[in-house]
Image 1 (cartoon, one colour):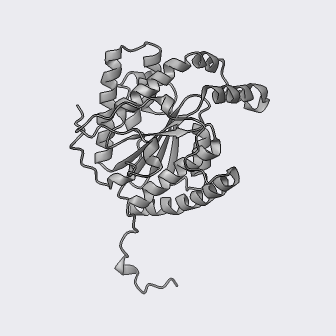
Image 2 (spheres, rainbow, N blue to C red; image 1 turned 90 degrees about the vertical axis):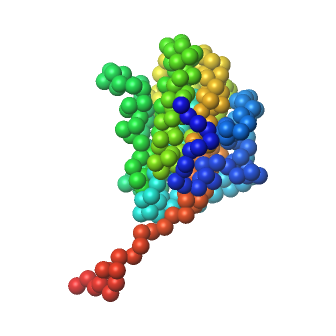
Image 3 (cartoon, one colour; image 1 turned 90 degrees about the horizontal axis):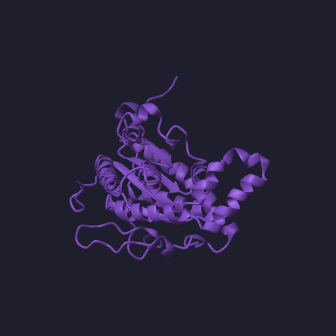
Length: 296
């Protein structure tokens, strides 16, 4: 299984691991570096209504986000042309945490040729005939691409664990499977950014009620959402467990306070922007055949 010390990444570690003294560092789940296993984090220590990346006002945050989305468009174009790496953005969170809103708010201006989004649902019968990571591997990004997972392979250590469909030993086994899978991706050029969108119980209640009260949002609501909400504490414990178990040097987790939709998008856009800038992206060398060429 995974060794935490010998992963050889083909990209700078600062692309995924927050530097000391940065705001990002306070919200990243410290990975086990093989020397001293970090103290496990408690989700209760991360306040869902915090705004660590805020400019100080909602108007200022919205303006900053607008600027960031333009930067991301330009950087994504360069990333696509560079073609050395891939980026996988993982969005996990409870119902109403804002996974769809993050996709719209952060990647709205990027080209659909280079940025793709996939919303994972319950596996089909054909998918269940294979191992649980089989369908995931088929959809990871290719060279120069950014893939955004709305939910992800972490559903397979979340839902089955909470509902008792797999044993505690099988849950631990799946943690190891996932770490090895992500290590394979990272060592072959995939930059993995994992975001856990963290909202409060009260914020979720309000957002679910809005979906009930607004007929135009009924399509977003399922009666099953109420049953899942009754398992709030169990899900929080399961999230906390896999955050601690699967935050690695090649794919660490970042907890995103998500009670504020604007700040959620601002924080993720900032981290994605900084990751792209850390990759020392460049356009391919000039083609000497094009020197002096004139189109008639």
